[in-house]
Every structure is written in C-alpha cells, then in structure tokens.
Length: 439
Ligand code: GLC
Image (cartoon, rainbow, N blue to C red; front, top):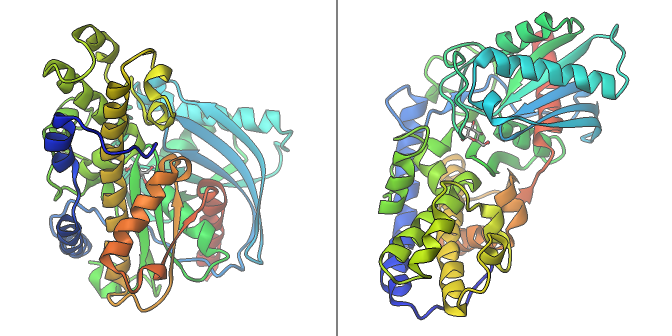
C-alpha cells in the first residue's frame, strides 16, 4: 500500500472517500457492538461472533517436548517439527510446504484429508524420520470448529474459499487420524487441534506473560483471547481451569455497514451472507473490492477507457499483492496508463486498505477493553498474516485509530508480529494438552 497525495478526481473525493471512511464514531459503535456480540456469543445467545471455547489456557513457558505440527488454513499446507526447551524458547526444525490445488480445496472431503496424510508421508521421507518412532502431531486447522476437547472438534462451516464436501459437521481430528491410518502412517497421533489465532497467541505468550491476544490479518481474519470470567461461558464452568482461550471467529461479525461494493463481493462469494468483517478486512478480498470499484468507475466513464474493462473482468484477478507494488497497474498488465488514472487507482486501494486497517485496529481495541476496560495494564497482541507483515501502512493505520480512541493509553496496546504461530504455537498447545491430561 503506497501512501498517495490527495487526488483531484470528483468521483474519488465526493463519492468514494466518504463511502469508505471509517470514522471515530464508527469505531466507537464497533466497540459497543463487539461487546454486545461477545456477551451474546459467550452466553450461548444468537450472535455473529461464535466465541468458540478451545479447551486450553495460556502456557507457563515451561512446556517441553518435540512435536510435529500440521498447518492448514490457506492456500499452503505446512508440516513442521518443533522442539520446546522449557525456557520460553522454541526451535523450529524440518519444515515442508505444499501447495493445495484448488480441486483439492473444493473437491471431495476424503481427497482433502488423504492429501494431508500424503503430505505427512512426504515430510517423513524428505527429512529422514524414523518410521518406528511415535510422534505427536498438533493440527492447526484454521476454520470455525465446534471443539469438544483439546483433540476433537467438528467443522461448523468452511471459510476462505474452501468448500470440500462432507466435512462440515465432522470431527476433523478423526478425519485426519483415519486418513493417516488408511495411508499406513501408524506412528503419528493427532494430539491437539488448534486455530491459527490460538497458535499465534501461544507462540508469543510462551515467552511474554503480557501477551493476551492473537490476531490473524492474512488470507482471512480472526482473533482469540483468554476469557477469565468463566461464569460467562455457558456450560464451561465444569472445566477445571482458570482461563480458557476463546476463538472469536471475528471474521463473521456482521454489524458493520457494507457499501454497495461489499454487497456485490458478498453476493458472488462462495459464502454469501457470512464473514462480513473478513470480507472488508482480509487479504483474500481487498484486491477484489478494488477491482469492483475500478469496474464501476470505468462504467461511469470516469476512469481509464471502456477498452480497459477487459483487464478487469475476472473475479479475484487483482490481488492485495498487486496493490502492494509501487506501480500496481503495470504489474497487472496495464502499462502506460495516464498518471491521473494511476493516482486515482492508488487512492482507491488506499481507501480500501485504510478502512480494513482501521476496522482491525478498532476490533483489537474492543477485545482489549473487554478484558481491561480502563486499559490499566500492558497488552501484547500477537499478530500474524501477510497484510500486517508486508504492508507497513496497514500497521500504521491500525495504530492510528487505537491512538485516536485512547490517546492517553494507546501505548498499553503493543502489536507484535508473530510469524511462527502455526508451528511453535501448535506445538505449545500440544504440550499444554499433554500436561492437562496428566493432571
Ligand atoms: C477464517 C477462519 C478462522 C481463521 C481465519 C484466519 O476467518 O474461519 O478460523 O482463524 O480465517 O486464518
């Protein structure tokens, strides 16, 4: 995201700037609505925030052991070996990455799980693992899951473009275990189920006692935090813990006001009516929103030429990665456009990304003030994902809205890039789980 100077284009200034503005008043409204929805979600009432219990609390930093982690949640799959030293440090060892073909993401569920099992086999053969030794594997499955125990949970619904059949409602740990068994991989036990947000929180909290939130700003967007007022968790009081990390699934928050472009994107998405916040905030959708605005402006005759329409006909062809480049349109195949058009497009991208960052920053503020209404202590927020990592302007805008909201206490919210959540974090979850089962 390249900061641009103000653009002298009537459609941009009079129509799009107000349309994509996320004001101080909008932010305060979001915080109030988040608190209501969080309360409803925790108490089992109807809510767009699912507030899913994860059956785990934060680590002590003393957890030890060697684990495998499998990370499924975007277009890549990773298998990782991790060693925890018990002193707040983790060592990530052998790692294999696999691209998940679209026909696997969107095909039959048993093929998806067979693909996962084959990736574990390939990992073993690539890195010379001992087939006789037993390994514990933590499964980072970054979708909404109705968890029943640390190593059991059923998929509520797919997000982020996944649609594999016959998985919704099934226990994904059992599906992975069965697929490994069918492939003859008998020495791996799937011992924990994690979300990428909990992975990020655990990875940071292992060495930082102030860390109390995990946030993902990547292909999708979501957050988790430790809930200490367990009386708020309907039916959870029977679990003997003093805190439980809650996977909020904030991507589904639906109290923001969508623009006509948000509605168009939603209508043609694989999950219409769902994941409203995610569709306004996360990397999978921001390029598409910009494409829809560009198409509308070409139609109105106020941008590029009618002949340029053909560059913008394919949904999702314009990506966040394109827009991160200094000359986004050249990278997209449109060379030699007028400087005023290039400026207008850069400004449109900036409006869409800034709105996303301000919503994300405000949502973080909402969760932090839920835990600590006066912002009286320091909170480290473990943040992972390409938007946060690769677009410096994104972090700046998140911090700017936090500062606008809490000018006196904004430095009590520290955003820390935490890239190793799905490896290290998942391993820590496995280790905490092992500790829990011995108690
Ligand atoms: C989607 C998933 C959620 C995940 C997030 C980030 O919102 O539903 O579980 O944490 O993407 O990957």
